[in-house]
Image 1 (tube, one colour):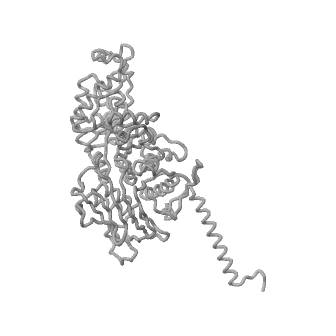
Image 2: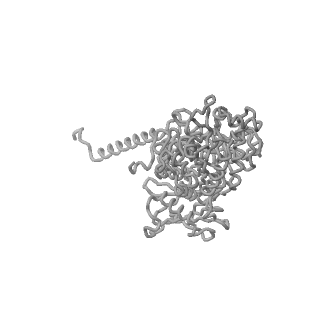
Image 3: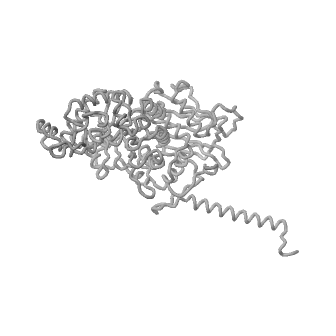
Length: 559
């Protein structure tokens, strides 16, 4: 036989060997692509498809078995447990059931197909059991809302138990994250037991709609992303120096003259209600911020005499400074304005700002100087600021609202109510500020280390993740006064085109820090879970930016 001629057996053996080598080469390529080599050299950050379960934020207590069950869109349903105090009339849960069903199975409708034969290894139901007498279906989330839940995944039915709808929402998110596809495209969930609750009660995102107007679709999309990360506060920095997009029924000229455009770049009462309801359905509070006396240039365009005239020598310069604190008309305006705000926003708190007040205009104004002398303030303009803030706080208190303020208000010695929430934002020595504020007995939130508008090359999510909010000198009682924190994305360099990918998944790092146990801090473990969580957000329609080199499994189905 010719040496160049192969027997059928030899040819088959060579083909098998070549196939094996090709498979090995492909495997090595996948490992190289997915290894997520880190540019800081601290860890290899490998992302393995063999561990498809990637919960974010990580629950407090979790046990996952190797036993797995199949889920089918045609046979699986989310339902109310018989013992539950909530039922089909609970619109919030009904909407959540539909939303999470689509997250798990795509746009297939729960009732669209007849139920097929149930396999012995199939999970057919998630029962949601609300245990309290009042499920709070029609209520609004609050600082005191109970977001804890227990989740048991086993046959014949998985059970999600929570005292009210807010905990149920968090548990539904976790359940949806437990579902993954195997190599054949079959939806799988492992036998699981979870007991979960947030470490901090206030877990917020600040978005700035003054420096760039954000269309409703962008705000709503980010509320959706917030729910995926178990955030529960939308801090809406709605107005500032550049523009006044909030439409006030009481003072319509504020937005008519202060917005970038009086019709296209405003939030009408209907828009505000839509945002609040969309957030409520996801267990998210909406806290508006109307920052004064500084950051108010846009206010002055539509409200005559509200701002202080600045002087150059003995003559007005034609420019204006902060709110004029010496006129009675100022406080009459604020009273009417915040009365409207209190009826528009149902949350128990409103953020009053109070930061970065430039005193130079006040110093130049002769009427202000005379007022200072008459009230014994001397040349200490922080006392004038405190005078204004104190009167404003009294106005807001009369509307039965609590208030949040930036740390300068506390630093300047303004008399505050016991339930005031002080937001610590200055980054250089925020641990000392936390110590001082809590020593005085005030509730505190921290945002200083989480200014996400400060961007840098590489994986800056790591520095946000490594922050420990309670790493300051103080007693245990002081540390109990820190109720959480916020990730802030100020609007100088973001608008509808780039805000969402800049925010996510960097804000996800803060989300886990505020939800999970303080000992959950391994960067390598976090990288693998966060990379997959980012892919999950992308698959759900959130254009979150990648952490590093890699890919998402759903890309195999087409980008």
